[in-house]
Amino acid sequence: MQTAQQTRETETTTPGAAAEETEHPYLAAVPRQRLRIAMVTETFPPEINGVAHTLHQMVHSMLERGHEVHLIRPRQGKGDHGTLAPREGLREQLTHGLPIPGYPGLHFGLPARGAIRKAWRANPPDVIYVATEGLLGGSVLSAARAMGIPVISGFHTNFHRYSQYYGLGFLAPAISWFLRRFHHRTQCTLVPTDTLAQELQEQGFGTCRVLARGVDTQLFNPARRRPDLRAQWGLEPDDPAVIYVGRLAAEKNLHLAVEAFRAMQARQPRARFILVGDGPAAAELREQHPDLILAGVHIGEDLAGYYASGDMFLFPSTSDTFGNVVLEAMASGLAVVSYDYAAGRQHLRHGESGMLARFDDAEQFKQLATELVADPHTWRRLGTQARAEAETVDWRCEHDRLEALFLEYAQAK
Image (cartoon, rainbow, N blue to C red; front, side, top):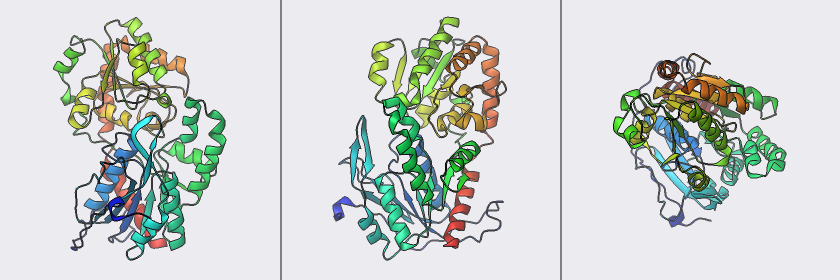
């Protein structure tokens, strides 16, 4: 049972008008109403990762539409007293968590069914979104089922694929079984691509529906290119800058990114490789590859300047469910080299707006990267077209669809 110090809640009881109604095809057949939405996640800003960013967008979007949001997440260390400023309709509840080995600052949530049912006793949510499949999410799911509240889950992380990068591949079948069981107990599972929806449904995950990702094209923009930053990297105006943004961890397939860059460097010796982010692989990269530029963590306009100051972007992952960084790189006008998978398959066209290698074909990935760095005209053309494609991907449209799904399942209970 939690004490008052272990749980922080911020609520405003003053009634406010619902957000102004907008015309949208997803909402045309669904009457608008103010919903009470619970969102459960084990990661949230200021943590930096795709899940935290996506949940942050969801929370603020639903609040802007006039809905109430009860955000439930584990406390990320002793100094965590909540990250969201008080505002109408918001309640932020922090639960117990334990540190994740190898990931300083990150915690996984412990079961909190009693505290959650107590919080919901007088004012239960109309619908719940569970973003992570851990112990916290499982306890929320159990509480919701006991109270008859519909639950939508999100599939944000390929945990069963991650296991192979840590010598735990033998656990993949058990992890897959657990994930299937978890998601099958929810009304539906939201996934970012059509391909993933089909894959999970064939594996027995139950009903899967697509909720794509968006990108802030005002923030991530080629206009933020910084000649001073490129000069710090030791580049002349026409020298190629190769960028990677993300966690520096084994599951991101970083060894392939380094191998691809070495092949690019052999073709174009003036090329530099800039890795933005941090993680357990950082120390090894610094030791084994001292010429690489490990820029650390950057956010906001600072991060946007790093993207825009590059020319090409490497996304070698085979484990991400989507890869928000691909959209950010596209919006920044970079030529992306990716596998034909996840965000690359969803938003890039090979040879027109990016370069797509066959899934998990490392040799072709390196070959495409090498060919690209040798042809400045091509990398600039692909970057221009990638920017044009990114301008068509809008967060608001996807959050209109998310709102429609919340309304649909809330009204069906």
